[in-house]
Image (cartoon, rainbow, N blue to C red; front, side):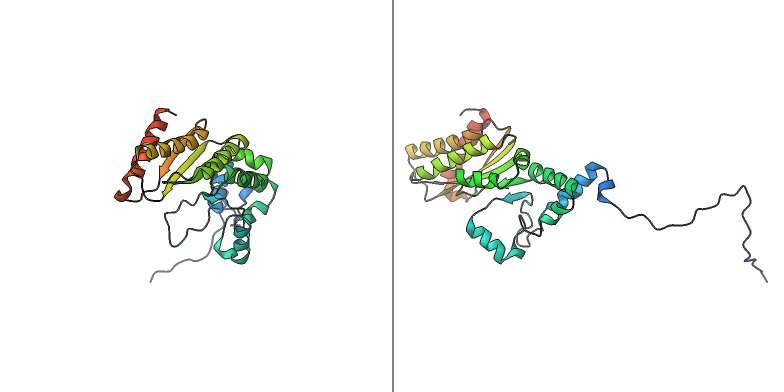
Length: 243
């Protein structure tokens, strides 16, 4: 028979005494290194990914200050994220977190303006922000819709003035994603083609002093090769610096 001695002996002076186990202290966001804290804030500000389009750029903030949009947000708050109570709690924690979240939001995210943009909308959006937030904005997306029949001159003038306002009033603008779309059937006329090329180059040229200018086209399939040819020429000229 084996007999096991269960008596606990006192440790000798040479043996280390283990300290008592204590509950771990609570994690505190402000005690983390600033780089880690800013990364956490970045992911906390991202909107929930939409179920119908998981590939959507979650860093794109759609700018819309129209009365219709505000009414939609008020009536269906669960369907919206930016500018609603679903997004803003982090900005209300305390002054330091608010400043750091503001840094991340306006410097790292991209603000997308609609195709019906004009200078008044630009100023209305910027006027809703603090001067500090405006100085933090780095990245924007603008969208223009050109008419193939050449009758969109008024809209082109409005876009030009809106883009001038963006460049003038957002002093640290670094990156512009310039998206071009067309409406109407392609017109197989060289004069009209040149007019569309000139329209794109004129509008994109407002941003030629910006560090990064990306010009993109909507892909509508092989049926609309003229649209692709127009955009290909514009992109090649912009890359070559031929305005």
